[in-house]
Length: 339
Image (cartoon, rainbow, N blue to C red; front, side, top):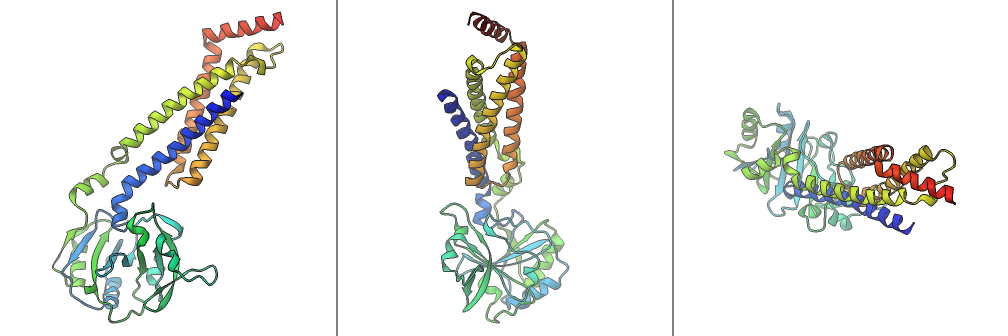
């Protein structure tokens, strides 16, 4: 019994390690994007824009035919502060600890909203359930908290929504910001329109060509390491499972044999093996799901279900067709008769 519990514990640990592998893979693939505040590889820096009131500029942009883009205005004095305006479908994806990111209603609201980096939540004012963040002597509602790890720059960042319906201080001007235009799909005509609105001389890519190539690779190309890790973990799980199956099969004292030796032995063995597999992998899945936040836990669940199913089918075929197992049943039957 103790040996079975030991191998169950190993299966729990191996299942949990799958979550660690997936989380590390996601962090590797998202690191560069997080370092640029969720902006995609399509992002363009608007060069030498004319210094003009930010509110007037946003109103012009909102009236333009442009769609499916976001604009980030990153403060030149404080690179951890950004105004954001977006329209339509955008590429922005930031890891949220709580709440939500800005939506189209926020970009049309008369008041700004705030998404804070996790390290800044200590500076919020929370009279009841709603948190507020002080900005330019005013308090604004915090609708979301973003962050990852301990040392990521995103944990220190403040994002504030912009809207053509807001009333911004006339002293807030585009010249105070680094302007980044991030369209869902790059179009020369749209980029030209952006340059006209900002009275800018041109654009340059935010992301270098090597990063673009890496991030535009398919999941399989970018995830070679995790595929290798999962294959190794599954191989270890298969080894552990067959050792566990060996212990179950040879634990003849746990079977209530009776007159239906062949069927009873097979069903009892499969039942015990299934119970161990489902319980161990289930515990490992729940622990990983609750402690390691990943984007697609259903992928791991699918892998585990396939693993359990294939293992049980293999065990059934072994029980019904193996020469060695036929010999085992004869030995058990002989022991019963002698007893």
